[in-house]
Image 1 (cartoon, rainbow, N blue to C red):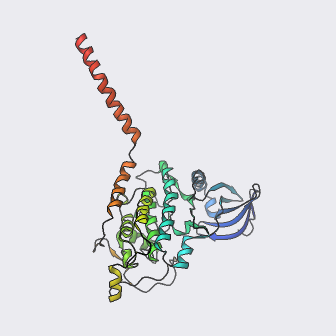
Image 2 (cartoon, rainbow, N blue to C red):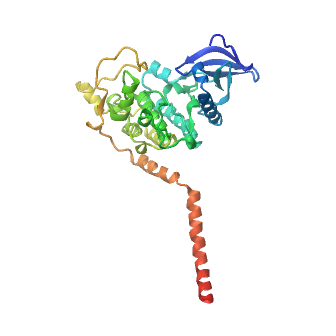
Image 3 (cartoon, helix red, strand yellow):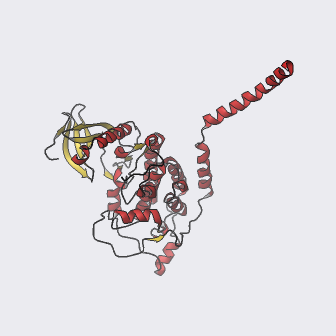
Length: 375
């Protein structure tokens, strides 16, 4: 990439600010509009595939149609010098992964605020028919004033283009954060993003991932078959209601989770309202820790799959083994969750159905009169 300094005679590449397996991200300049931008340039091996170029064009176009305060805006995309690129809003600050590395687990108020904002952005995309497919802390950007913006909708796919029975050899997402169905190569859905948000929540409030493995295949199997340690055993100050929400969205079956990020966000808002700062009390796990019977909280997150192995400890239990005890959600949260089903009803269809019933009822006496007078 050192030889490429300008794309399409418009976008100047300045400083490399991030790199991954598929692309590199630069701080750049839009010379036409004279504004700072972030430019994601895909590695050349992907640009050589015509089918991939077309898929990238479609997905970038879909992402460019998203306009939300909690989503990084896509300005442009193109192909130049045998490179695919996408031009985005430049966001100052740091990503959530860096923040967790620096601070360890987040306090409840700050963590819930950020999680709700992430749900709002991803929920907006779900309403637009898009699935992110790669929700992880690296793609959640935090500004200096604690706003959150979701980035990298470049691999999002329109729901209308997904065959529910589709199986793929390509696994979308990052192994630490993808859902059981993604791990199986199945088509992702909004509930897949909800699962990934659950992994992010677990990490935010415990400082460690629910599953740790040395390889991607090992992680995939754990997502499909293993239960995580209840987060309260790692963070005894975690409210019971929040633990219940986290364990629910980490369910193996998509139907057992919240269906969209909007629904998850509304439930998190209830938990946020119920939380009273300064009233958090250590739970039973703290008493077990004091007696020496609880697991020790893990060291800060290490994302590397090839790094030095951690000391052996039981990370999770088989799904057929002892199940974690889940305290019931507060009554208000349960009522709210039930109300979500009502909110999601297609009221237009219901109205048209009622109108048809009324119309038929009104015509019935007329039909009877015609029948009596003609026959």
